[in-house]
Structures are given as C-alpha cells and as structure tokens.
Amino acid sequence: MRIKPGRLLRWMFPGVVWRMDDPDGIYLTFDDGPTPGVTEWILHTLDRYDAKATFFVLGKNVELYPDLYQMIIDRGHKVGNHTYSHQKGWTMTPERYIEDVDLAADMVHTELFRPPYARITRTQLHEVSQRYRVVMWNVLSRDYNSHLSPKACLRGTIKGLRGGDIISLHDSAKSFRNTSYVLPALLRAAREKGLECKILEL
Image (tube, rainbow, N blue to C red; front, side, top):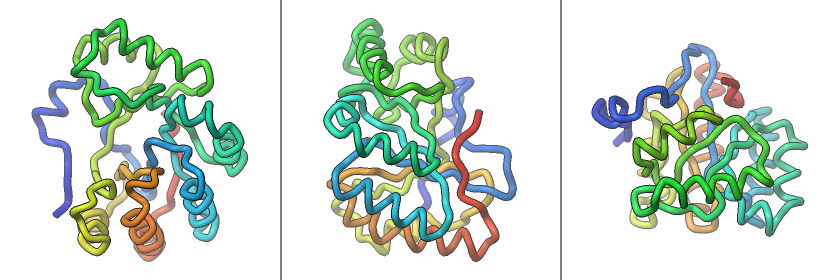
C-alpha cells in the first residue's frame, strides 16, 4: 500500500511542499539522524548509486555526533532542521515549539524544515514559515514500523514511483531493518526508470 497525504492534510497546511515539479528526479529524505552505524551505511549506499538526498537532522543528534553531521555535508547532501528534540507539535505551545526549532538552528544552518511526525499546529506552522520552507512528503515509506516487513515496506514505497516524489525514510536504529532493505532496491528502481535522486533545492 502506497501511503500519500490526504487532501484535507494538504489543505490544512498551505504553502508546505509536498512534492516537486520535476519529471526527471525523485527526492529521498532521511529524518531523525545522524545515527552512528546507520548514517554511514546510508551515505555509502547513496554513493554506490551516485545518488543525493536531504537529511532532516535532529539538533540533539548533531550535538552528539558532529562528525557524522559534517560527513553528510561533505558527501554533497542537503540538511534540514527537524527540531532539537523530536517533539510532537500538537502537545506544545507555539513558544516552546519555536524554542526547540531555534535550539536546533544554532547547529543546523539551513532554509528547510520538517516537523516531526508531521504534527504541527497552524500557529506553529505560521511562525516556522517566516524563516523556513516547510517540506513534508508525498510518499511515506513507514520504514519505522516494526510490524511492517521489509518486503511490504518496499512494495509500498516503490509502487507508482514517479518524478517529483518526495520520499520519507529514516536515519535511525529503529528503522534500519526496513531501511537497509528498501534503500538499495529503491535506488535500483529509480535507475531503471531513469530517475535521478536529487537534493531539495527550493
């Protein structure tokens, strides 16, 4: 099953980027890193296929693993702000949420932002949008779901693969069982379709 954002969700968040207008490229994104052992594997796999991606990193992980963060940049990939501590915006005041975003911004210098869990209030979104292009996704791999087999995860991710897709994957130990199966197959599928894996440039 291919997971896409519904029309209501897209309507609720005007100005958010859900997919790109690009028939020739797809946009792999990795949330929640950097993560020792996982980030290096992802970067090595992307290199094998001459693919680029955008990493929406957590400030707390950048603080813990600055060398991994720098490795992402040195390999020619893009970074985005994914907050400092991966909080659900729905449970926070706008002020506290922005504080968390700003804490990450001290370490992650970027014009891109993705809210954890896609859970952000309209007030929070308005505030964040003053300084960032907010990027969601139009294909959710669900690689974080431990109840989903790697094969099922792959089927849902590559079904209907087409230019302009923004694909949500994860750079985390929790998701690695599925991510490590999906990513090489996804890169092969993109190559077979003549689709280039690009960084988000907005």
